[in-house]
Image (cartoon, helix red, strand yellow):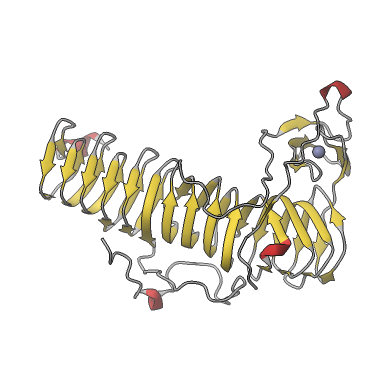
Length: 150
Length: 226
Ligand SMILES: [Zn+2]
């Protein structure tokens, strides 16, 4: 994170434990424990020592520590190499570094269209004529409910 | 700069690197003479081929029998019969179809622009997705979804990397402790890093290591299908 952003950033230190929801209209960095949901209209950084038990609803998030809950981001979800993600991720963009632990579901399409396709029915690779660009042409797939269970 | 080739011995699975041009060489480990050929199959094939080069199956190509052993296979056609052993990488292009029982490979790449949907498990070491893949993936190496690529289905494996600009719609079970859930019939990949070797040079006898038979490509999939 750059210095300019840091000045407007709320920081929850590593010795802080919060029980309850957190709402933040700017960016936030959490290095401690949060037992509850986080709603943030800026960028959230979940630090290496952080432990979140709750859902994250953010503009963008960078996860270095541990999250047990679902993550919904308007823009990008970054899972750094040390991240431990236990839950579902939905966002516009996703970056996953080699080394993460991720148990859950991911629904990410950079084009913005959902892609929850049904399980494959044919036994061989399909040869759909439109080929290429996986994104952007699948509005018909928007029904796939992905976060229903948590 | 001379051309570099990563060679995987089709007899013992040992990986090494050669520079320059050559038609054959010797495996530094098992000392087998290895032939380098680049082969294109664009009709029905039942031939038997062993090469440390690349076999390309064009959209009109169909492998219906015989045995093909190659370092890399580029598949845009069909593998309906015979046995295809890919000692390094199987690249799937648009229109590729294969019976899982007929193919074994180490790594898999989904070519950019290809749309591949498999109804059987895909079992491999590394998987690179540059195109669209819908499958249940069990990898024991790195699954990499690159910018422009899209992976849909299930992912089981120890390592995952997703580039910004890639798409993912999948159930994931990924982490250091996560072994592929699907059983593998054999292990293949040579554990050693490729070593630099000279073309056409016999290795010295004292360096000879006992031939390992563990380096057989693993089966592509367990589920019966197609
Ligand atoms: Zn050998």
